[in-house]
Image (cartoon, rainbow over all chains, first blue to last red; front, top):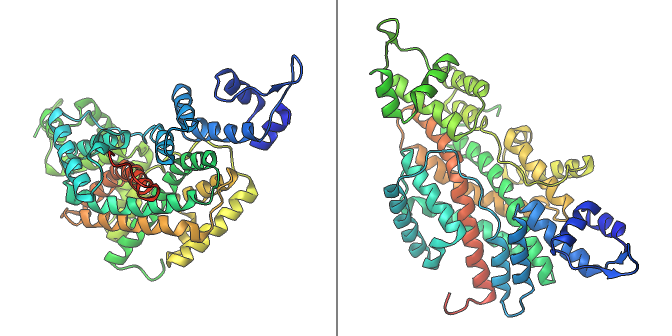
Length: 217
Length: 217
């Protein structure tokens, strides 16, 4: 297929595709003439993955290039390839609060480490991107007068486990590894507002249940 | 207490307190002289609530004023006061994807309505701020080739229910209604990155469990 068809089938504009080609995120097509090239299904799949990383996931171009190298590295396990992609996605912005003190951060690290141990998750997770995001948020909570110990975080981890099971179930619908990586990036990001919107609805539901719900509601 | 002490005890700068006073978000203190006023515990509690709404929750000033009016309205139930505050918080930004088509949005509404019915949640939730955010996100997912029916959304709703139970449990630690409203705003917002970071860690855990985990990990 030509560039115009690649654009139509992927939903990515030709200008954006040319940018991805220049940045080496998409391999060049088979050259037909000085101004025309032929693309195939491998380009379409790779383009969908690049779009998921950059447009949906907000991954910087340089990081996207590293992720693609990991995806193409046949020496890595499927787990490592998925991990390279998902952990490259920027963590959701924390709420605008003051910088936590060194003491608050140290205390938060201790509680998150205790949580990981309680869950049987690897202690190395503490220094992973989501682990560091968790420490920062727990420190911010403490600074606002809402301290959390491992026990207080546990129900959120249990809720997260349920969501993660559903996430991994969905990935199994995709057969190629490239599609699985693409889906894992897209669904990690796109399911975040799903989960958060449902949590707000569930809060209203739980509040109504506990305080007695008006008949007309 | 004087303005300086109110600032020190709340952690809110005097310039910000003066802004809140001018905007009518904080009632004036008892006037001591042309340039000095006396503040008390009611100002401190209200100031913490205003900070939670505006600085942590990102609620616009005009909306914060409406929320405070609801909090002060003794004709409302606790459930309605909490709801007024929490539903005023802007929904998390959706991922940057193209605008959904009218067909995608209509199909998403149908699926979300079916989900609410399946959960036994009020059908009015569909037009609430989180309900609308959910419809937009489900439409965006469909547009990227990840359609969801009510059944596919259900595990995320179950995860959200667990998080909401933990949220409401935490609110019961606070005795005054004003503190509960403040905590519900602060914790709704600050627990979002907690839940999302834990979900990414849980995904890695679940992926390792399914694909066989390397010994050294």
